[in-house]
Image (cartoon, rainbow, N blue to C red; front, side):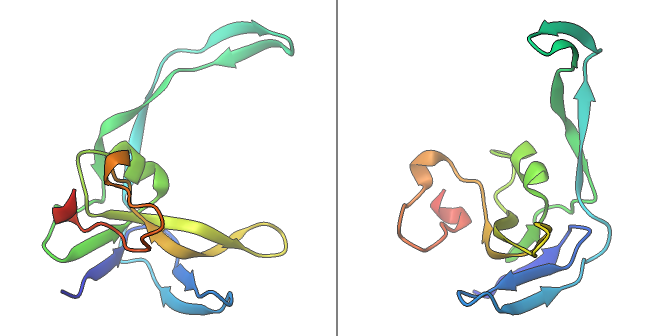
Length: 134
């Protein structure tokens, strides 16, 4: 099976090899997938630093720009978007092991990650579990 990868981030997907040479550079495939958030009101909280505004934040149920799951298709999204959908989607990937330039700005990654239940993680295997494994 050959997977199709759709980049639903606002940035080029640049993947580097073990020698830090880029070997994939994929432009975004349309509008980025974004998860909304719901916030509580601001509560002034007394801290050792003085009064600080605290806000409770939760991910919204809806995600814009994310197509329905399709066989043999994986969507590259932000880690935040993938985290908001843990347990609801198994077709989302996000950049991991980021590569940064001399200013510390991310310019790519060395791998694509996918959230799986801890019990489904195979440490050291080097092989990502496929959706039918979870």
